[in-house]
Image (cartoon, rainbow, N blue to C red):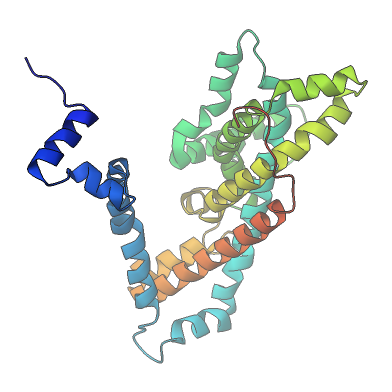
Length: 308
């Protein structure tokens, strides 16, 4: 029979041998052995994120012709490339904002327990499992020139010509809303579920209506979480690529910055320029995130009184 060694037995063995155990040696240096479990995660992060990022950053300053900043000078001096930033922002910002704002009232009503909550939640998050390709095919079938929506409108005499809702800005926008809303909804629902309901109950006992409770109790507690949700939703929307190709106009109104990076790297085989565009893309996203998080720091930062 095997008997597990207790800390006292380990200390006694160390005293007899004159050599402290590994656990005690690490403890003397302030190192907990549990922290060693972080090593695989850190290696994974270094190999799949840090090294590719540093390699791409170095590659962006090594153009085929010109000085180290030639790629960045070319990008900002060429309107066809420079305007991809504004195009991507014009698509990504509204889509992220609508996803967050639309998820708040729905998650607010669904945070409690009621019959059919699981079924309704499942229906709301199903689009997240479809992916951009199936979502694009669905949009073509429903809102394309010969889709069901245009057939319905023409049958009832509401339009003379089919509405053009794909292969333009609206096609990409609808795709981002459909695929991004479940993600934002789940995050907002988790933040709302973490707010102690007794806080609203206390406000209600003092005569506050539901609008006052939401405005002065729930919203201040939820606002920091909304900022994080917006940042994550914006990153997903700003990095749009498949939707801009499948249901957008990749060479015109929906030529986003990701398409410009792909074109430079894999069509022109200028990997240095493609890396530079990717670095610019990352810098723009970080700038927006920094602004939102800076605004978040001015909001209420106390405890929510619950599991959040």
